[in-house]
Length: 610
Ligand code: F6R
Image (cartoon, rainbow, N blue to C red):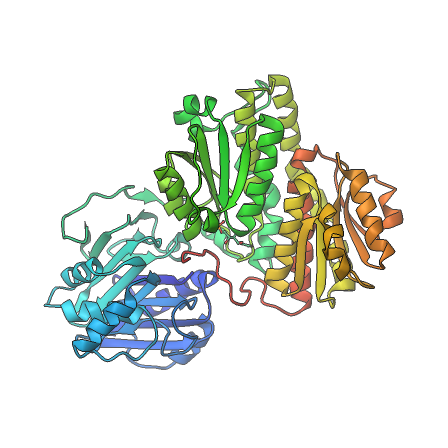
């Protein structure tokens, strides 16, 4: 969602903040703003991208201080206007706030503050925080922030500066991520490490209800009642480097991340697969190894692309480890009255580790006695800190809003967890060893698929004007079909539906008309013949069939107008290959339609609000 960045040190704050905002822009990009203390507090805001704000600031005076903060917004309360853009200023003390999250009791607080004589100019919940801090300010910014946050319910990561205390930056968090980078006599605070890595080698993340007062000489961490708290986790080396968050020779981050998949999978599986011994070594699960032997049920919960990976995880667990498994939209699970039996593990699957619904679902399951496991990419994220154990993806930072390498990483980790569990049950060392061999071959096979990129583009070009597409698959590749449809929808704005191929006859077949593109995942596997029948049903109604099929399958070319090839692979691993041409198709469709691939409309990278 929104991105926040704040700086205090000895350098000019403005260029540093603008640079940080550009790196955070994937979190939200409908408007942006900056505040700098340059004698007095000065604020500039603009609707649109950070570049618009940057243009607005050119030649403008009052922004040359060494303390400041900036924000890139994804609107929740209030429309996309300059007035609603952050930072939000108070009306008494020259203080300003930037915020990521949602204040749930903002309406009641606003009425209270209006009664106290405060005048609001925006429709945002954030302005309520700035006015509340202002109301409670008695010459100590840190104390006023603590007091204000004691009154607030909801989620927040905030940064606050005040012209009356020009050497103090106060930041706080509950439910939304915030990380403090430590430089040489300078501090840079941001929603995620990509905005700070160029300036700080060390950092710490805030825990919920932490308030940090930062000056150029150091920092102090307290809770909302001003009791000093120790950092958990402690100060750590930042593990990402600049090359990982820069485009290099690619046009878009999504393209870069699709191409990174072979290496991402190597990193993800590296050191975890022991082919010789026929076992999977997952350090993150070792502490609960005994409990896992008694596991009776697995509930996989997630949203969006991560849910599609979780669905594949379910098929894997049932098929290879013979463990009853189910998948749940986290947003539904958290508000149902789910029955959590003894011996249940809930697995939260999330790239960011910050998705509000997934976090809440995990929390709910844990309260009901489930073991909480995480399949997460971002180390130290909120979800990873709520789990009893877990396995990180290790695919590197994912910046493209449309998730790609995280998906393959999630499926790879779920495959490894399944193998780990299966070895405790029915899978022999030899079977495991064979599957490990196949896993190790995946990166090379993805490289072969990527070599067809031009061909995928040409096929996409043929159908790109069509407004309705179907994505169909069965078994392991039913979730892949869902993922193909989601990718196309979110970046090219083409309407697409994914479904199990057999479901088509129960209604959606009525949609098929002449030339409608239907993408079938028709790799060799248990349901190949059935998929071939479904293909013919579409052809009979003059739909255009694009098939993702196994290399060497001569039959498919008779039935499909276009074929995108994937190398042969055991069925349980096939989604990690079949998804790649679908990602490329979505990418090319968006580029051909002239859309901003990395910043699709209405979307933001991590959904930290409900
Ligand atoms: C789609 C996409 C989203 C995310 C979903 C969950 O390309 O990226 O559907 O998968 O918002 O996000 P995480 O994985 O961060 O929990």
